[in-house]
Amino acid sequence: MRLCIKRLLSYLASPLPTGIAEFEIWSDSIIELLPPGLESVPRRDKQFVLASSIQHLGQNKNRVPKHYFVSLMHKAAASQVAGIVFSNIKDAQKQEQAEAIAAAKLAEESAKTETPTIGETPN
Image (cartoon, rainbow, N blue to C red; front, side, top):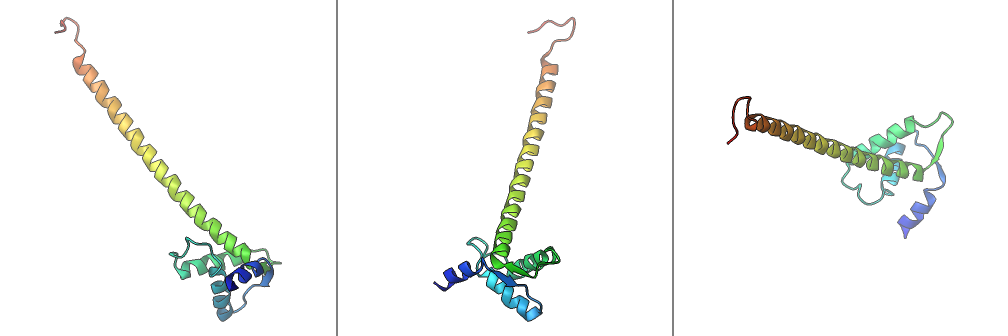
């Protein structure tokens, strides 16, 4: 029940941290709200994303809903997965292309050996 209330309150603007100890508490409160599937990401990496996102906020932003950071981290994880999928697809395409080139060369070489030269009679 407590987490449900925290999730609701995360939609309200809250002040950004202005000290190291305050950042630790603030980041833990956001990490607690993250959706399932991000548990395996180290806390330090999550804090890095949060610190980076604070630096990318506009100069006049001193109060931001915690849900903004939860959504941002969810999007970052989805983007990372999408990048891996892109990479896997590109690797598979390269492999397929290499196999197609090898098959075409093999077919060309076997066609050369089977084609009779001028003056020869086929068997």
